[in-house]
Image (cartoon, rainbow, N blue to C red):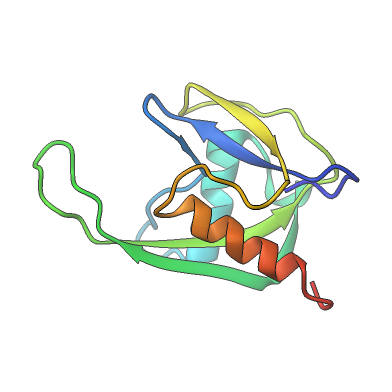
Length: 130
């Protein structure tokens, strides 16, 4: 998310959807280490360029269907909130593109994971301590 007067958040373009920079945790890696690594790998935004909000952590378990096997997968989504000063240049490496979306909740992007996350962010940002 940007800290500028007109806040916005980043989504990455996949062939069939918009999603957040994310990925699987490597062995011996914490959830936060994974999030920071994936952010840099997928966008070029390094740890030194962000301001991590240590009071926000979103976790959700969901069960998508694997495309290759048709079986249900068990996934735990863990998302952290970080800001950058403004819409920084993105180095797209693993996706078709990206977009900075203006922050105007409520958002209707993806009902199972992104919408609940953005609702939690809106709630968090509305708190006096955020």
